[in-house]
Length: 221
Figure 1 (cartoon, rainbow, N blue to C red):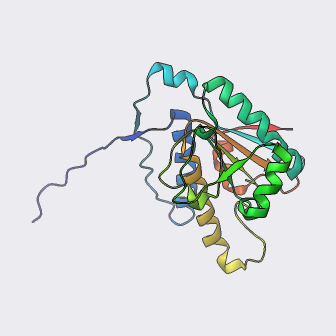
Figure 2: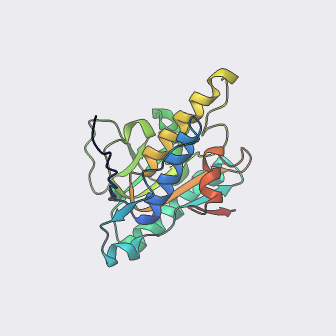
Figure 3: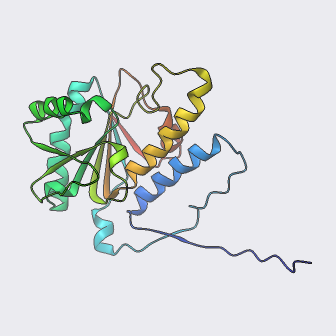
C-alpha cells in the first residue's frame, strides 16, 4: 500500500503584470489543448507580487491590426513614444521582437531603421545594451530577459504560425511551436505588451482563444 493520496494546491507567482500573466496563460492553454483535452491549467491559481504603483503602470495587452506591413512598421515609433512617456522609461526598457525573420537580418534592420529614423541594436546572446539603445530581437534571442514593455511585430496568420512551404503533416507541430514562441516573447514584458499585425494576412489563429476570452484587446486601424 502506498498510503493516502494528498492533493496540494500551489500558486504561481509572476513578475509580469496580472493582465500580461493572464494573456500568457491563455496562450499556454491554447497550445496544450491542441494535444490533450483534459489539460489542467496550472495558471488558474496565480498570485501577483505587484504593488499598487506597479499595477497603475499596467494595461491589458493590445493587438493592433494595420492595413499593410509599412503602416504597421511606421506605427512602432508612436508606440515607443507613448510607452516611454507613460512609463517614464529609457529606450532599452522596450524590446521590439520580430516574428518576420527578414526584419532581424542585417539588411532588414537597416530597412527598419530607415523607416523609423532610429538606430536599433540587434540582440544576440552576448550583447550588452546601454540605456540609449533601441532593442530589436527575434523571439529566439530573447529568453531570460525582461523589459518594462515589449512590442511584437509581424504577428499575423502566415507568420504566426508560419504556413508558407509547410505540409499538412507538419502543421500541428509548427502551430505548437508558434504558441511556444509567442508565449516566450510575450512573457518578457513586465507592464506593457503591444502586438502588431497585418490585416491583409489576417489575425493570427494563435490569438483566437485569447481574443474570445478577452485577455487581449483588438484595435483595427
